Image 1: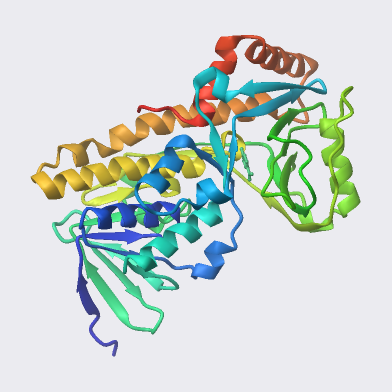
Image 2: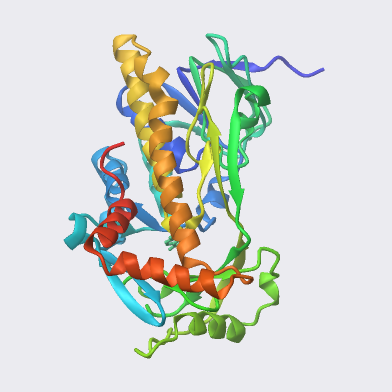
Length: 398
Ligand code: PHB
């Protein structure tokens, strides 16, 4: 017979030790609110998962001002603009001049490394590599998280609140009865082929390119490692592509009269990234709150995923902090609505960038020409460029 679970009492139990879960844990700790994080993956597995790399100014401030780390400033790169490229011509969107803001290129796995280090430094209770996690009693005053820890002990966390920050395939979200949540989603008929390469930068800033052959994104990691993507079929076998074929495909999507030439180097990672737009409403069930990818996912074209997760965490932290300092649950009651306002703005922006920049293989000549008209109307208007700049760098309010 199984031994009785070891019972641990905490205020906030957080399922998921990615950036959203750890950021919330850190903020709660700064307010003296006891919390425990459980995560099924190992620290090493998360550290080695490559995701997007753009942080809004608000996300950067959150990391630095809350005392996580300044590494995003010292090791990351500030970017004051991007290039939108179509018809073989680049058009710079100057964020700094248009809206007075910038973004930082700093990979998501480094955000995780910084957050995990800060929780360790501050004696946070973060348990990696747990198994058989389940959540229960969510609509009672004592919601619980049960799991088996890395030593094989069965543990039951008794909480005031449970937060599901457990990513897009969220177990917490699925614990909400299907009749009490609504899922809104769309699939896209394409995916991204992503590579990491050992090569110098091909351009000073990111290039988002629309071409008759499909979309390409020329991103970066540092002086010697670069990240690039190109639109591909979701069922493409990434491993079957030779380096030469990948480089030729990327190059023809940025070809133009300016002679832009990608700097090639050995490719050490190549994979297909599928994506969809998804929102779960509401983001709350009883005393369970969803944050980040557990509640919504966006296609990567707008670089919003991690930033939205951190924006949720800010709203949720303020609500929990207000509850523990004043006893009022007003902000908690408003969490889902407040967070979803920003989520839907980001959904719109991500959808817009995705549909404007990608080309469906079966698109008619009308659709292709219309998309070029749309791109032209953005770059040839100060207001168009400012809309893009404001959304990309992150709305300051709401
Ligand atoms: C990345 O560098 O991985 C990256 C940058 C911008 C995006 C998506 C991914 O929109």
